[in-house]
Length: 249
Image (cartoon, rainbow, N blue to C red; front, side):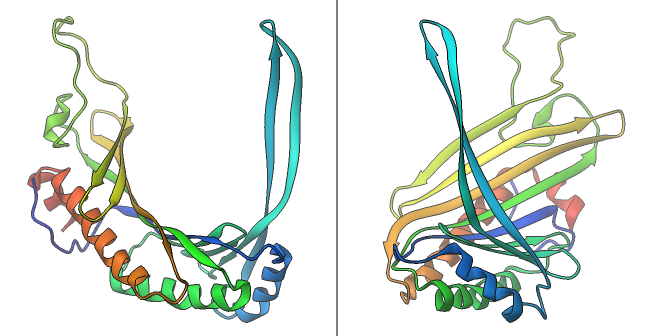
């Protein structure tokens, strides 16, 4: 397990700051369209986002009908000129995405906070109901062995008793943990991306969140974000052997 520290070449492909809200019933998503002008200098690319909902009906083991429901306009995505930063203004909340190359937490959270204030001014949400910090890491490391304990602290294991020539060629593992004292939860996903004679490439996806009702101007929201980030770091560094972390320094 590794010690927490700043990594110059961190394998982060996407960092996400997410805030779920309750909006006034009278709010219309189309009102976010006016942000095209307000955000045009830093986020000149605007896209509408729509949603559809599908379902099927089965009776006596037979498909009787399928249903597709158009849920309409859900929000707007605003992208920076280089496409590395995205602001999502939706009917269910606000999201800020930072794509690689990652900078620093302080810069990411500062930009998210600034954009959140614009969202609040436009939508006047009644409550914050959930906040989250999600970091998606894509690690490419030299291939040594099919024993994944060389790459992960909690690797997948082949059941004992299988033939010795059996090897792992893919895996997807998700666990949900809970810091009971702070009431913070995290989804931790480890999945194999690809493997060849030179490299092992895998995803470590860490989504740390708290479900709680906050007033919109409650500074505890931002204090809690710091706690989420700390827990994210703990999970990342404790998930990897130090020899793997050193590859990204």
